[in-house]
Image (cartoon, rainbow, N blue to C red; front, side, top):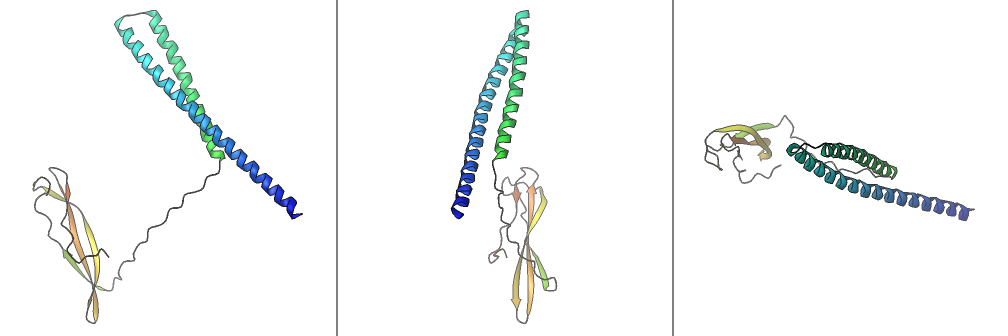
Length: 184
């Protein structure tokens, strides 16, 4: 009894694998047809442009008819290419796909609000390091919180490095982090 069930499961697995291989082959075939159609479309567009240039130079009914014919052929090819693309997407949709897993980055909890805080602002640059211009405007700031232990109490020191952008060369500048800041 178990042997028969095992054989049924193996047969079903083989069927699923075969169907998957067929779908992959169909998708590859559709992709190849699509790339061939795209190349033909590009060459026809080039030929139409050449004929239009010729037409502007010398008026000819034959050239105008050729252009109309080629434009119709181009429209048919574009339609066929989109149909091939839809078929390829349908074949790809038939195959099973696994959802990607994205890991959440860990985020530190902020220090409690009841701890005493001290805000230290580092002097911003006076001139642009890139071009030497003095027209700087504030862009934002980087805030680093460090927990400092003072005997019998704690204090959070916020070190602020203001970001500035130069209005002359649009370079962003801000002072370097002081030594001892570990980015906690």
